[in-house]
Every structure is written in structure tokens, then in C-alpha cells.
Length: 397
Image (tube, rainbow, N blue to C red; front, top):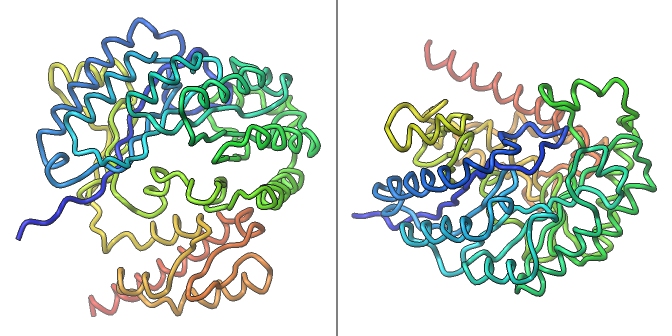
């Protein structure tokens, strides 16, 4: 019997930026405008070729996400062409969530926003990052907070009723009061969604090279910023659903939830990752190589690994414990045929310290637990790894 189509998220990577922020380790290219048209042509061709196979017959698309880079920097006409190609070649549901990442300085006026809305985009994620001009300059951001306010107004006038704002705490020289002013200013714009990330100093970025001379907030101060944020956003009606993400009721990012819920998604573009049909794969992080492989053939993948659903026990725990929904002993045991009893004592110990809690039959981390989630998740994964090793030893015997 033929299986009904399954839901699929599509991710489109737009690797162009006006300038490169000092903290960014994503694959993006500043000052590469001349390559935009050639890239869009290759991307459309790749989408069409992929849609000729099982992606168009075995799946229906319920989320589309344009990330980057700075997708809005690509321009309205190119974005419309890409989305038109997706809608033409794939089975896109009428209620699909279609997100566009944008910088406040490159979204354009309300007419541009209206054209994007009419083309089918229905959610915008604005990279605001801070309400402080000093902090924005220290990051190399190409916009002001006033431009962010103008971008929100343009999006609203253009017909968007689902906006997300990205903010970063732990910036050079930032105090708790500075961060509180940023959150309050962002919340005053009444977005439906807020993402609040702690600054990460990634190796290979300009920030990595100068971190020693920067006045970066220490771990205790960043913890204070985070815990205040969770409490304050709850007061304002934003429910936390993942470590760094908060939304008004019903406005959680459906696309991002696919990653945390182990759902399927297909990525397109240099550096884009996919997890579909039991295979996780990624494309080369090289714009020219990607375009050439699409147009002329060649090896376009940088990695590929088949991982059956029953072998994703570690992922289930690692990703589930990042969310407020948490993990379920019943789900874990039925999906992966492993006992939850070995994990429970550790979670009970973390409950006693205020880092975990049991809600109904599910376990989740508290805000304090999210602050040390890497340690907690690491311990849980180690317990499971030891249990799997004991099981394998028994099987061999």
C-alpha cells in the first residue's frame, strides 16, 4: 500500500551579506553581489532536479525557511523567484510557515514587504541583536536600532503578522541594565517571537582573535541576564519553548521545531544540511563549487550518513532536553528499545538541585538547568552509552 506524503521542511541558504559580523561562523560572503544572479539560477535548478524525485512525491512541505547570511540582501525579485520555484515544484501546504531572515537595513520599505507578503512569505525574522548603537558597532552590525524600528513598521504595513526578533546578550562591555534596556525596547515593538542568544566566541572568527582585549561579561553575569530574560518575557506573555526561544501562544517557530523534534528537512545551498529519508547530509561550503556542481555535475556533498530512526536515541535526548517539552520515558523506551531506568536517578538528582523537573510523565530542564545543559546532557548521554555497551556485550556473548 502506498504511504501517504509526510511533512517536510525546506531550508534555503542565502550566503550573501553586506558585511561580515565579527562573531559569525556561518558560511556567508560579504561584497559578493555579482554572484547573486548566478547563484539563484543554480539554486532554482537544484530545487527543480530535487523535486523530480521522492521529495515531491513522498512529502508535502509545511515550512520553508530562508536563512543566511542575509537573505533579505538578495533582493525582493530574486527571493520571489526562489519561492515561486519551490511552490511550483513541491507540494506546499496552504498553511505553510514561510520565513525570511532579514537585517533591518536591507528589508526595504513597506512596499517591498508587501510584495514579499504577496509572494507567499508570511514570517520575518529580524536580526536586531541590540538596542544600543555602541553594542551594534562593536559587533560590526550594519544597522541601527532606529532602522530595526522602521523595519518592524514596514513589515506590519506590508501585511506581516508574524515577526521574530533576534537578540544577543553577553556583548563586550554590556551590563545587566544594558541588556534589560534591549529586551524592553525589543518587546515594545510587540513581536510574536523573540530569540535571545548568549554570545559565543567561535574559533576562526575575528571575535576569537580579539577576545583577550574585550570586556566580555563573565559566566555569572550572563547567567543573571538569561534568568532575568526568562522571567521578564514570561511576564510579557512570551512562553519559553526552547533554551533560547520565546513566543506568544501559537507562534513558536514551526521550522526550527523540526530540528529539535527530529523531524525531516531538506536544505539547499552551500553549507546547507539535510536530514531526510534516514540520511543526514550536507553540501560543500563553497559557493562557486556548489554552483559548478549543480550546473555541470560533480560531487556536491561534503558529508553523508545514513542513520535509521531506531539509532537516534542520543539525538532524542540531546535535542529534547533543550526544549521545555522535554523527554518522555515512554517515548524513549518504545522508540529505541532502551530502559529509561538508568537515566532517571540522574534526573532525580538534578531535580533536587533545581536543575530538572518532572511534569506529568515528561522530564525537562528548568531555566537554571538550561544554563548548564551541556553538562547535564553530557551525563545523560554517558549513561545511555554505557547501557548500550553493556547490551552489545550481552548480544556478543
